[in-house]
Length: 267
Image (cartoon, rainbow, N blue to C red; front, side, top):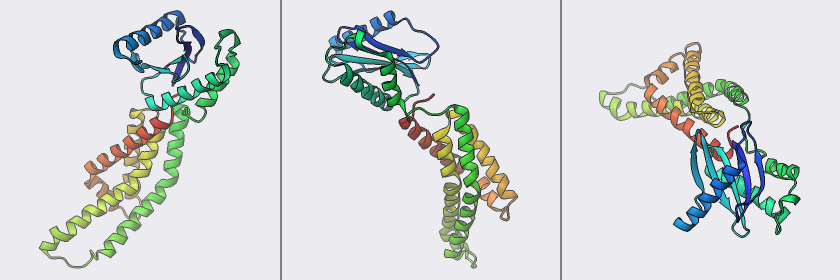
């Protein structure tokens, strides 16, 4: 979430600022804080510190222009991806330079025009509200769940017939042939049933807690559906491999959340 953004020249003079939150910040104090960080880091470290934890789920991103005497400071949510924020701010800063270089006179900078530039760079990179995302995730998962269950059943039958598991096996084959295939069957079922839903839950969830809750609800619903389907024994495959199911589910959730953080800012 982009909470506020500030454009400064190399002398620490504020050229333009925009606050996206109801809470108002004292700009004079903030500008002095930004300038102090820039000057200190340049003198002590030889470069500008670009990421600073501000506490209370806030962090500061400082980005200097590579060629122009311009610096942009953005206060964002602590959970936002640094690379994504940097990309958005850098593009906005370049739009600012293209429009107002070389004078950078605050009197000629139009707030409406700058707000439009910021919104254009944020377009498609801010997630919808949490409730919309939760409803959308369940709408998608609900629409594909039946087909995933059918695919799981058919995949199991295919593997069962391909390896001819219906034939009589010896005690030696039980451990050398049947057990590895049984593990394969369980793994295939878990991947088919829980990879797409958990990727979707992770990608669209507002936070980890909601993602986990949705994942556990889906697990319970899936087991229940199997018990009431024409193949109730498939429920025992999931229950019997519950630790593996949970590991895969959490892994798929993590991938979805990570991918989402690289594409969208939290609202």
